[in-house]
Image (cartoon, rainbow, N blue to C red; front, side, top):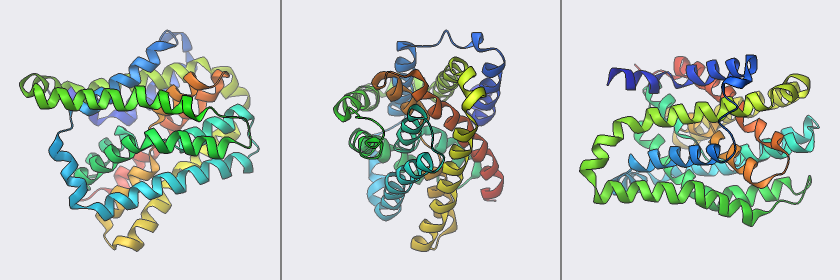
Length: 304
């Protein structure tokens, strides 16, 4: 059990290390590609669903304002920043659309790990992740289509179907299994978080390995844009939520949730809905960058 906790607790370290290893030797990870990436994300969402109970949704009703603040910032601040940075850095179309796509994604389960390590409000983090993930079925396709329209025509319905398949179906399946087969799921649940960590690391490392040449040759502007995107998410997430709540712990939790995206979802949606495979690269690099920031903010935000 200690080994399982170790895998989950050091998630940022794994994703950073494996991403760098993939840049050094892509062949280690590029076998994990195609449908395996889609099924990998579905596995992550299933793992999330298995850890959820009907009672968890009551937590949203207990703190609706806090959850709503996080949701609004997630789907207003981040998509606008993604579009603005893509324009400011004059990114190539495939990078620009990929950046906008990942900025329109919900908060990821990695944020729950960072909130746990920072000892802030884990229940609130899980509530925000759950609501933003379920809301992604509507918001991610709509906002991606809205902000990417100046670059190319986006099939918003195709994005909706993809999001529905890899988000809603696995999560609902996990919740149903938890409800009807609690004894079985109780045995599986301890393994769900580390399984999610392994899968997201494989997805990120694979995409970075496949895009090694284009990242090295023309990825600097993209990397800077993503650094600004995530730093701004953390910073403004904290500032705006503190102005509204006057509560440091709640503001830190919302900040982490807003600053960290579900990069795995962005990568899968890019792979399934855009012809240029490089569109998925911003999502992979995003996971690397927000993991680094998350690790830094664990130190800065750590509650005694």
